Amino acid sequence: MIDNSYIEINIPALKNNLNFIQSMLGDKCELVSVVKGNAYGHGIENFVPAVAACGVKSFAVFSAYEAKKIVDIGLELDRVVIMGYIDDDQLEWAIENDVEIYMFDLLRLSNATLAASKLNKKVKIHIEVETGLNRTGFDTKELKKVFQFIEQNHQQLEIKGVCSHLAGAENIANYYRIKQQMTRFNQYLRSFKEEDIGFGKSHLACSAAMMNYPATIKDMVRIGIMQYGLWPSKEVKMAYVVRENIIEDPLKPVLSWKSKVMSTKYVKMGEYIGYGSSLLAEQDMRIATVPVGYADGFARSLSNQGKVLIAGHRLDVISIVNMNLFVVDISNVDEIQEGDEVVMIGDQEDQSVSVASFSDFSSQLNYELLTRLPNDIPRIITN
Ligand SMILES: *Cc1c(COP(=O)(O)O)cnc(C)c1O
Image 1 (cartoon, helix red, strand yellow):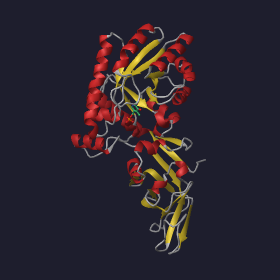
Image 2 (spheres, helix red, strand yellow; image 1 turned 180 degrees about the vertical axis):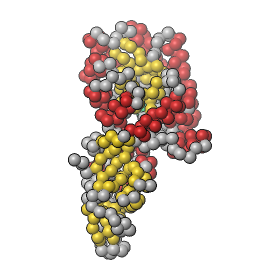
Image 3 (tube, protein in one colour; image 1 turned 135 degrees about the vertical axis):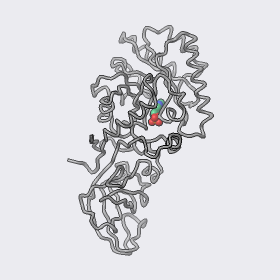
Image 4 (cartoon, helix red, strand yellow; image 1 turned 90 degrees about the vertical axis):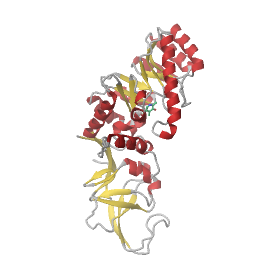
């Protein structure tokens, strides 16, 4: 049984993207697959095993809740890292399951150490340093205290990494700020070395940084958006395509989102379609309703804006997107019938609606659009 819509996860596309990313990294750098936001909407339960099957066994998430979803799959993995939120009462779970945790303030560090001594097991940590994003992370002034704490509590601590995050590497307008962050990060690494504190792996790069600032590729990179076959921004794509003088996109979108025509009908000239008066039929029309709405992540901003594919044609979404359905103008395509496949994101015959174009119409970031796809839409693996 298929619900009102479904998402397909294309495994050959995923393999292609991971190969492309690996080719940017060389063999010494560890690739960490970032699967926060329910694997950018692709679904952790399906996506993580698929990535692991391609040989990438390191994952990063935002929260302990997401880490638990990965651990519960029961795969043999190299690492699972929580980059953001963990509640104090989840610390023991994380330590017991060898889940690694970002540390960005002393309270968190001491709470984690307490939990570790209670369990008589080391907590695996990444020290996040402040380089200029100004969100979380230890700054240079706190570093001395951190070093002292580490020395005093080394029996409870295993340092797996030192890391920081860049403030918009996908946009050349941030060039100066990013360069400054890179310099500061290297200064932190020197401080660790001077104090002779082993820090495991250094990691700074996300997708955009890997492409635009190769010097950010350290011992490890944290890659999200590009493994899903999307670019962090048009700018990053253009810079690469122009530099390499290529036409074909080296990335392949992994996700498609599809539904079916629920019903078709004719509407007479002079009638309004849907709620209110946003669409007046200026001639006799034929319309199709699709059982997908803003409750499913099909944004209201796509009202009278969106495009979908039916029967190999690119067609207009008309009228207001409702909670559970939207309407498509099929006046010019006689062969469309109830039950026909509708593609909201993906390909059909020689047509395609990309996440990028979809997010343009809805004025959402591609990251935002994907992560807003509800968790309960079925994800189907296609090979
Ligand atoms: C989301 C995230 C990444 C991955 O970013 P992409 O642009 O998707 O590659 C890397 N590091 C941190 C800290 C993140 O939050």
